[in-house]
Length: 181
Image 1 (cartoon, one colour):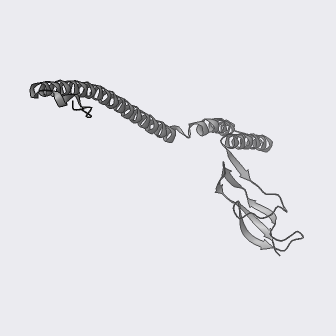
Image 2 (cartoon, helix red, strand yellow; image 1 turned 180 degrees about the vertical axis):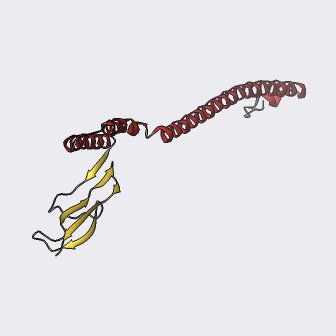
Image 3 (cartoon, helix red, strand yellow; image 1 turned 180 degrees about the horizontal axis):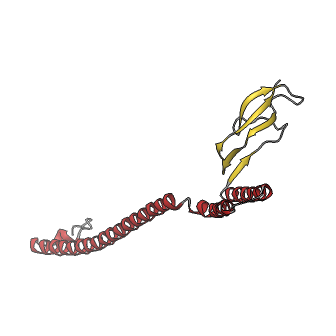
């Protein structure tokens, strides 16, 4: 008796059996591949849908951001303008007085200046008004002249014109005289 060491069960099969087995195997494989294809089509469709939704959402975010920037440009000064209205009202009221005394004019001017300063400060516009003896800062001060003085050199002697900053940006440096060395 010959011993068959080959584990292949088709060694003893007839050609018809081999063909039937291969056809069954191919049919099983075809069924598996069709199922896998359907699964991949479903995943692809789902991913395409997710992509389109994400793209639409990104477009909506971009459009909303553009609208907000446009509104900020158009109406960014609205708060500042609103804070200036009382100043205009005070000036109109002062000009309406026909025979104002110098004291009334001075009082009205002082009150209007306080309103204007307050309106500027509410909108982050602050005065640069260095005290005498303060160190000269070229980022906030503009030296008009250097004068002999009884204080350390490179310090402010006097302010000829206040400067202004908005947040941390200099709108106008303070015009100052500086002590000579």
